[in-house]
Length: 249
Image 1 (cartoon, helix red, strand yellow):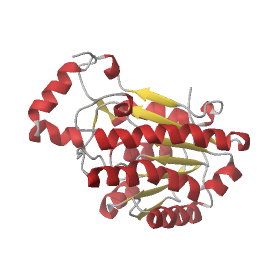
Image 2: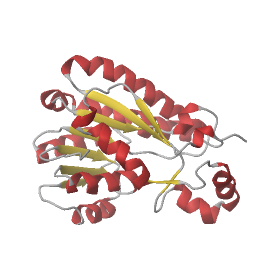
Image 3: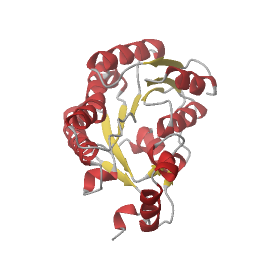
Image 4: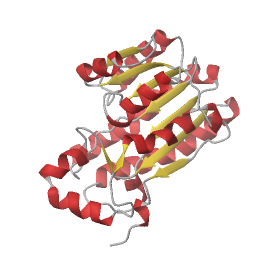
């Protein structure tokens, strides 16, 4: 099944690296016009310059703030003339349990998606669009050093069910994916291989697939759930972890 995004207007929050970057290129290649957002303007411009097609947009923003979300979403919608798909992959990636870790996780991993949906509400209703946010397998149970991060992601999954119910009669779909341990350039596991080799080796040894996931492994699920092929799916969180949750100590 070929998934087309021809003429689709796609907003991607967290597009400077990892899954957001890979999704931006894939959707642009499939005919979409995309609007990119993250804090790192230089990285965003690098992604933008490599996109096929025309009519794309990129702007840096602090998406951990209400003002940053509203400003970026407004500019992105103005640039594209609306929105058909909102993809939110932004994360704080907190690994601690301090008040700051909880606060940062709450603002970035939970409230950024909520605020962006609200900022795009009218345009999504007008287009009968789709929203996909990024949770994590850490929302499903104990994972060391993910207390704040996992709590925010579990909250996000609850928000998905609530928003999906709220928007269902207006034909707007809202779903989440929950990746397992995923490696990408500059990400946690990329750094852990050299900075925390014991953790890296222990994690790798427990994975049924024998390797970490990659953004390319997660991408097909993203494209499907954002496409019209998933028009009858809403309020769901899809676990995409290569069997990681099957692992036992």
